Image (cartoon, rainbow, N blue to C red; front, side, top):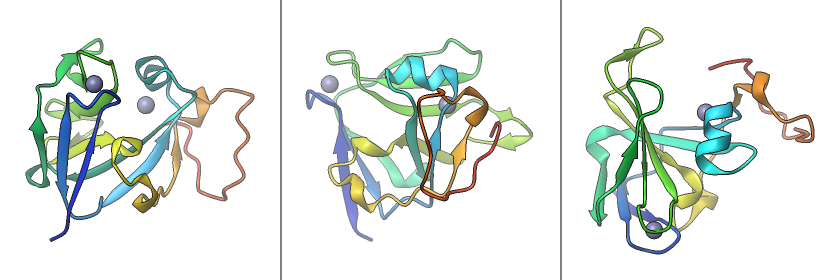
Length: 136
Ligand SMILES: [Zn+2]
Ligand SMILES: [Zn+2]
């Protein structure tokens, strides 16, 4: 498989995925807005076994119990999202979620939806034709 690399703004954290993401979507939820400092964030996922941190050590923040966001302690870039155990009737531990734009070549990402548009900022106008979901 083709290995793809990515990392944070300052370069202290690097990660690698084995092959292209199996799923990607834009999340407009309030937590992502605040955690990443943007109007929305584009997440992508691969199987947990296909994701590895190759340089540095992620710091984590867990505001919502069970939801852990990994970020670079030097520059603050949020890179990962993980949920412990079952959330919403789904076992998330099999997947590794990461910020799609952190890839060295984010153009390979093919987002398939907008989620949590119930939190979408009113000045964001969507015209890409992707399906939207009020929550996840
Ligand atoms: Zn950094
Ligand atoms: Zn979100």
